[in-house]
Image (cartoon, rainbow, N blue to C red; front, side, top):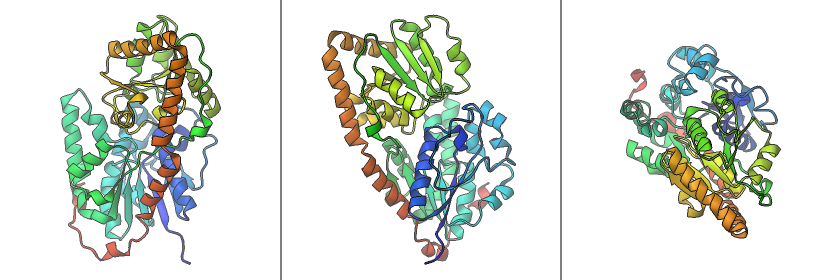
Length: 410
């Protein structure tokens, strides 16, 4: 037997600063390690906003290199923080020769997201007969495409033409892993072969560890995620202020923790900060609904955690990942315009439902959990991810193929 194939996992934050996208990337890295690959996770840096405990206890079957691109100003903690992590997509603009040397010598390249770095690296490694997986754990085209600012929407279209469209010529050399049907259609329209696009909504949720607590008096709403503008924190605060009769359990860290802690009006927001998994599951089990006010989500692991706890989702209609989740079963929740009144109306409807039909509301939550368990079955997901990994084993055929030189675009 020869040496195991070497895999470079690129494009996620350091594990100490992990969020949902990083959790997905780590899951895939562990799967590939279990399959016999020699995997190295190259962390892209950390803002420090989650603190040193966020990644504690993370199962790592792979090699880990935190803050791998310190020489690139786009990976500097302050730049990541000021840009609200958007500078991650620009890693590779500066110091590219050193970055390329760091990433040399691998057989398979897994990119957590399409970025400037993936655009610059892919033509070079494909020319060497290597294989590539482009995952989509948070994509620029979802974020920019759903912006209310037309300039950002145009920027998203231009970025797609520059970062993705030129890569379609590599055909079988690239496997695209999409999280939802919106992403799948985007790549198809960009010209990628449908046979090389594999749609597998990825999550790491073990439903057996989640539960529904006995119904208690009051109405409790869960929020789980980074405390940033893109996650809809300003909208969350407005909704809480409009509904003093509800209690909002906010779990997560981020640069908007100050705004959460300074809400004086009704004191009905409980800011838990970063919570350990056991505590998180207990809080979710004791709530009655989950609010997901994000501007965009590729899938939203937090939403699936809410469903695993039987929580109906009150969510933004601009978030394609949540739209995808709710399309699987209408009992999962409602998609709403991103304004406080729309969210408040739906939360009040759910609150009245609980008050007027106590037993039926609990039964509805149990039905949500049961349906989600079937729709997002962990075994089926695992099989799909293994298929994606296996698509990249044979690479000898690519060495004989000739491709146009598109490396001069950057």
